[in-house]
Length: 397
Image (cartoon, rainbow, N blue to C red):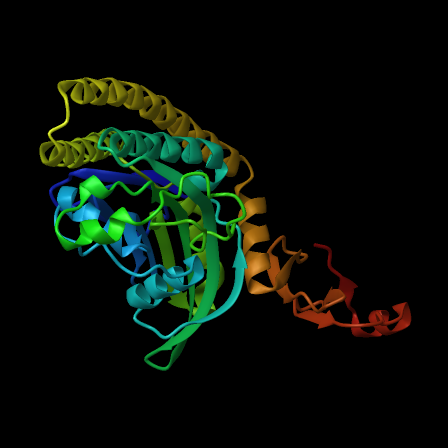
């Protein structure tokens, strides 16, 4: 049974918590730089079994921005935080996960199956969604106060888990990669006074698009109207192992994913710095617009309400994580076995020695002889006379 452990760096700074096997080498580090205005820093955690080549990773927060409308891209430069390295073209979630898996595993991968990801994010999806929308509603209020009312289009909170196969140094490997994906599309009512020079003439002739949301696409990343897409993952997970150790790697991965979370005080700092970034972006815009003091007072009230909402949602998430962990540990063997069977394409039987043996799902009957050898039979079962001659007895799942 794996135990919850603090994942720390060499100086014993605690960054994350997860359940890891006792014999694995585990730790974590912090990437203390702004990756995106919504990601002030991130953490990387690992749990490794060098003797068998089983490597498990958990990476927190990563977000990207896609500018669908080049005019709003010009607007965004007025209140940008940091550089624009977080701006990239939108790609489908499955392609995003594949890129992550290939980069981390250093292999060319082929997807072979998918399943549900047993993360706390997925088990508390409504809480996650409410928290995300509370944040974006605050950002949209800032934009409205800055003279550019902004409206949400599509949004998505969803978990992904995909199994891949690949080869490293001539050895067949299996990779399981998952993510807690979230994203939102939005569009703004264009305000010509936000622009100067040559752009103003172009924008002045355009019609504000408020109220045109109906009839747009519902597939995330392709909604209309849409000026901007923000997308990424709250957490990304991966296990890479030689194919012969897939069962052991899968069990350890399930335990890790279902319990992984950033250390609580660090998460509080994360949220506080996100709010600071949002305030700085708003003040940059206010300086440009020279808006009234009342807008700053509204900002402070909105921040207070948001902090309360995020605090409540954070507590709910923490309770959900521990509840998910307790439920999982109460039925650990059953859950891990079922997930392993689904991914591996096998069923598990118990032999006369009380040991579990895995047999391909195509087998209709499984037998054991008096030496303990196991035989799988597809189709019609042998008659009793044949079984007596072979000294076989049928095994049960």
